[in-house]
Length: 363
Image 1 (cartoon, one colour):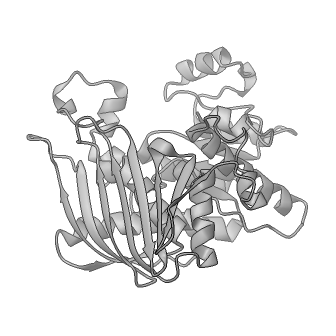
Image 2: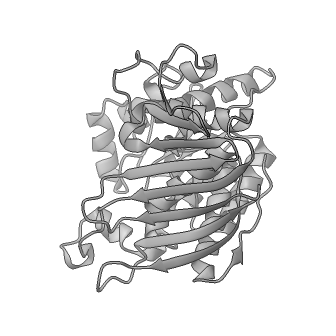
Image 3: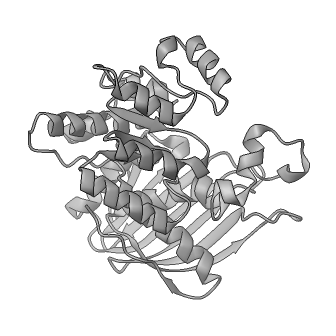
């Protein structure tokens, strides 16, 4: 997914990597993927050192490893002067996230977080409409991410390498459902509505009998812009299929987007017919049209959304390298990742009582 997205628009060329936690397998896997054997490294320290010795060494890293490795790998890359595209969550906790924020700012690095749902053309257009005041003052924001990946007691099954780290809270995160999917829902709501979460009271539990991990979080939310809202994320809903839905209500009307029909956005203004806006519609702003690659009606999906993040990170990096003014690209940043960690910690701490979400200064 990430390799194809990085290469899609020609901005990035993957040339080196660590392809397994086992050094021997890493080399063999990299060669099988078509990489130069000399640039298939056994660990990240070797990657950073080896590439630093080359005249054509790497400019950035993409971190798509188990959750507990995101922070140390990102920290090492930033300290080596590299830019970063990181899978979510960016860290285990807020303290680590704040450290990454400071390192990114000190080094003036590009740091993008792989929240692909916020890079679909129609979620970007929803954000545009909110910023333009199409809905008026926001009053209610509802977001949910419903999935069935944990609908059975996976803990009782034979353990694969992936299950071993996913089912270990020390490795997967403070609440596995938030690390895996809830962070996407929270970011999508905040990004599109142009706000952050100020306070939360959450139901944090496991739906599957016998489970000790958190597979369900549902919360009442108050945003910094005064809007109220609801948040629900679970991986324990049998039959759920990455069902992501966002609804934003303002004084003038509402927006409705869902991942099952990702190329369309519903706009309902009070007293007017409901409009269905599609990716590729000719009246869309140029920056929204540029996010799509095929005519209206042809399917596009998550890979293309990831590609938009990679493309924006690359364009910012090029501008910085050339000493040009840096455009304000809306890709998810390290600050966004830190706010997610603050939100997760507040949900866990609240357990039914209203709890403030710690603030992270925006870039």
